[in-house]
Length: 208
Image 1 (cartoon, rainbow, N blue to C red):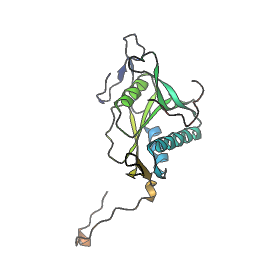
Image 2: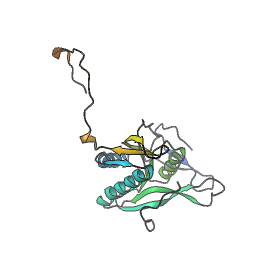
Image 3: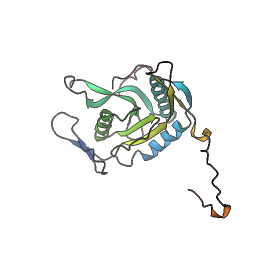
């Protein structure tokens, strides 16, 4: 598996016969990922659990895709098999979208930097699908290898009633207050410009 992120076509063996399939989907999904990022930028919630945040994102992505006329599948089967001893079974994608005007989308949603999700999305790209990784959390997000498109959803976190469980909140981007700046005696003249199958029912957790 090529995970170098050098922009070259990804080669992944998804057939099991030892022959990799090379598909170059770099750049195809950029406007699609940008559209999804714009949709998620308006998402807001308060004091949700990790499972609830993931469910909210699944439904928001599904609504976004449905609004564009695409067929949505939750927990869609991935082309990537599960690790042994379950190699006869396949992983699942959080969301998949069939598009009449182009290649389908494969979407994974994660709070953490899961290596398995990267492998899954690279396999989907090798099969000719547009891979999108929706990452949410309160820390920074490392860019994934090409051709995976990263869509981020920053949140804030606080301890819940159970010390082991945190609660997450998010304000829409346009509603976030501007950062406070301390007065340090700057002069005004020193300022500069700153720059295919039936959809799985909602609410069913994915093992992958």
